[in-house]
Image (cartoon, rainbow over all chains, first blue to last red; front, side, top):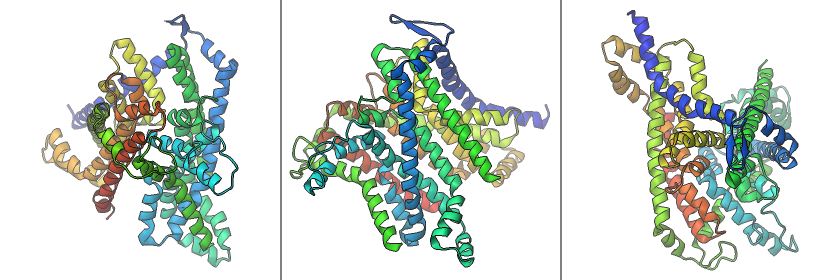
Length: 284
Length: 256
């Protein structure tokens, strides 16, 4: 056996366990799920079929179709607000905060990142509730006559999400900003650009890759999350993941849950395609 | 501009820290509800949590699942990364893509797929099933971190070891692993945190023995309680200690 062949065989042996694991516990279950999405429920029995009935129902049944729109709307709003809030924060930490306090400030800015995800949503329920600190303060200061209902509405879901993703985006944008050479800004200033122009015309475009990566991550994690809308949003309007869990819980409708998951997958893939193309165009 | 910057910084820090600070403060609430007014300090809720058997079991389960699943993910990722960094195999690009793929799929979908497959082959929802799911989500992460860490320098050192007659396991154990220690530690730490905090896979794939996030979730169903605050604060405290410790040791060294 030639050395090269032997090398290849050893390399393949090393990769094999990880590949087999991914195949057995990711690819096969996923394929099974796609198959399941073509089946349907008769009584409590799952009947294997090959029709697109579930998908047809998703796009005709108002409550299911609405789930898609609710999810898309919430995700879009969260992504935009988070980027708008995180960019200035990352910029201030990267440029305004003295160097020796920078790491400290960054650590502090993402501190709640390290609490448990479930607990973080619960904390917002605590804060935003009718008797929570926010309403207490607003009423106490005389800014509101009486508590406003935020909990169990879309606003609560959005606030909870924005909180999480501002931290995530601050991290990605900060790491982008810190790599930029200060010479770009200096050159622009020497050429007569105002401070605002430097930010808008030089720094901002240079951070687009970081922003896009962060925004895409936000989109993917936000649209697939069950915990935050379930704890904070209540049951008035359901997001896609909530609908999926509902199908499982209420009557064990695996086919419909699978079909909804495939739709979720497709949305994420489309988002990826959109971002990738957009990023490439940026590079040209 | 300067004052505006500071005002913005303070406002955003307030927003970011508000829920955590509220959580911790009201975990000491001397009353039945963790909302204002604050009635005084008590450690009663911490005592209740620490003597709650279900909670402590869930904590133990979480530690075991997180530890074992990250070790498996780390081992598989390490082997795959050294294999793919070593030779160009036919289909290398496809293999890398396949190994990374689970990272782009939401946990709920991975959980649902596994649940269906396990149902079919007769594996009951259990900690083992959850652990398998956690390896699926953490393997791409470990692989990506380690693959990125193997540069030209590392490759030639591995090749030298092989040329000098080291066996494959010796190359991995005595050369690759020590060289990649920072990356291995970072990957392990991240995988551990993700598994430790993961909810939806554990929720769908466990039944009687549950992990900590699932136990906390079932606590939430009984409404707001300072006891939940106490659990949350403890989890937070532990994570902060770990993060600060890592910041002071591992990452400081690594960045030099």
